[in-house]
Image 1 (cartoon, one colour):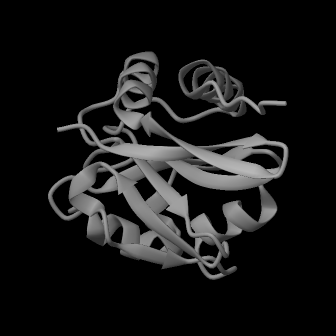
Image 2 (image 1 turned 135 degrees about the vertical axis):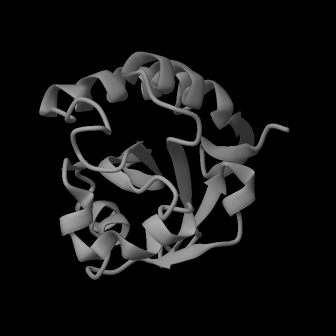
Length: 164
């Protein structure tokens, strides 16, 4: 089952909504970074920009995170800058996320949180994780250069356009 999320297309002062299928984004990023299943998550912002809801994969829909400085997702949303952690277990801010995705079986060790920005507004966050019993078994560390690769994939797959 695929989950569709939305991208806003602006024409004059009218906003239309088109569905976006994040499963293609998941496939491309997972292939590029050689990730295991369930390594890609999307959180969509509410209209006021006060809450982020898990929208992909579907089994996490309905779980929300407040947009504040107390969690990484909120910080990335506010700053509009990607975040990389190659030792998530040392950062207590990730406890809820690790718990939510079943991190006791195979804990999250490394993570990138990338803001998806459209028309100068953060509309969603992309969380990319590597799991393992420890940072070494989770695979290669994320690098700053990975952000450019993610940006390229997001732009290609989502093709966000402002319609005049």
